[in-house]
Image (cartoon, rainbow, N blue to C red; front, side, top):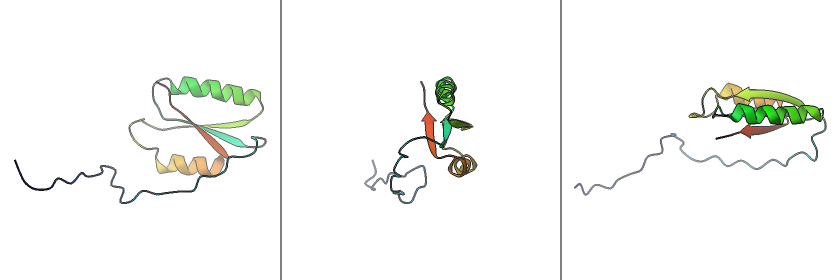
Length: 95
């Protein structure tokens, strides 16, 4: 057995965590564009289909987004589209 000190490495290569202030949610959703992000886990589309239908029934504008795989973070292009087009976002996870 080695006497060398073991150093745990972070596989995400993040050098330091990013702390962002929490944004205050809108007072209401009137006029808001609501983004629905599927993380591509099993049945998340079914869950978000129901959420989209309920929001549309109430007259809200809904945009859909989907990660290519649940095993990796969303690509930067998807995140930028959400930021540019949406007031709020719902991330759908269903197992």
